[in-house]
Image (spheres, rainbow, N blue to C red):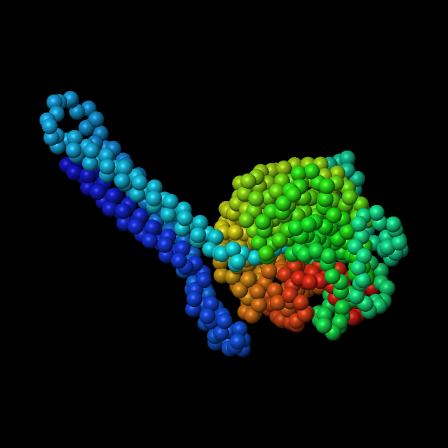
Length: 632
């Protein structure tokens, strides 16, 4: 009886394994033939919508079909995972039952074999069956891996627009917002002091950074100084004379502003400008070399970088006039490759945004070359971190924390996150990463008045102590190829990726909620105490409730979004890839304040200071101003 039961269990297990193996192998070929989120009907409807943008019924059908396909995608992945668990469980049951079934046959007494021995024949057959079952299981697991990789990536190379996703830092750290009005200067100053104190506790020998605005006298002196670096002499386009004003104290020291968190303290930002007519344009100039990185502002200076197969360069422009003050080449660096690494057209060699702390400015390129200069363009140090093995190209931006330079150095061979001294380039700490390559950038989040370094990856969002690199927490919640950077507000960290979730995480690494309705591919989210705002590559701008993840409001727009939204002066500023600027209210209404074509395709995220916005387009760099610009 016992042997009969075990034999039946083994047989049923084998049938289950065979059935599910065939299903998973079939699933692989189905998934390879068609990506779940790319539905032909949906793509056709989107094309029709472009020619009939006022048809609200059509837009509603597109939205419903898009949601249905996304839900189907996640159900598909869950069923695949369930199939894997079932096969593993049934394989274990099969092995155990066979083991028990033939346990007594190990000690069969030796006997003389006849010419044709039925036992020997059956023993040989059992061996062939066992080996065949093992081979089938191995093949099934191979197809599981292949189909899982396909589902996770779910994108073709042309669809992966990884560009400047970056970071920033500086003297103005992200205060916590308790409402949707803008943050008080007293809270801001308190957080500034905390950043400096945290950095000094870890490095007591360093001098404290005094971040002062550049006044008019300093700006004029800098203009007249003899610059020893290579300077590109160009004929600047004629610009309209602007009234002289004192330099704003508001800086934008890295990608998405200080701490790379998407919040600016700038006031009186213009809400309308036009490159063709010159309306509200202070100046416009060309950039010597191409790049997808975003501009940064400190005092009277604007920094960005550019690169091609011949050279990599860091640029400094005068904010008041658009004049190119100096150019610093990233050359004569030990270990720098002679041949440029291959990158996709939408990433290039200069996708990472530069960063400054008001004393030094640093830039990194897809070659692994990292350079740092003082504010006048004098090279302080340079090193090569090793050419990053990255199939699209390196894109993570630099982040400053006091006098420390934070580098998220993701690549497929030796990924790590590190902290360097901005003045000397000496390493302060370095931590290896186990996550897959990401194209996002790190941020500094203030949680319980203490700084945390937040880094995206696959499959984890990770928090470190920026002073020493110690791990605070790690949450497994991402998948696919992560391009969007995280954000933080009111002690909560938010992370999102198109083929994963939008997730909210508290100070200790507990997941508060996660949703997957509208998700960004490249553009990074931004948050206030009450809301989380994001923009997708398929034209949706959405407002989520920061407390529970429910969608409060959304807009469907005939545009793509790779540039990240920034909150400034109580408004959300967001560029579409087409170059159209969209301005929304930074509250639950997400009301459209303005939308207008600027005249040039724009993928970078703009930089803000009082009364001004600096924009990098595919072809140029320009400064838009408020006609009643902020003065002191």
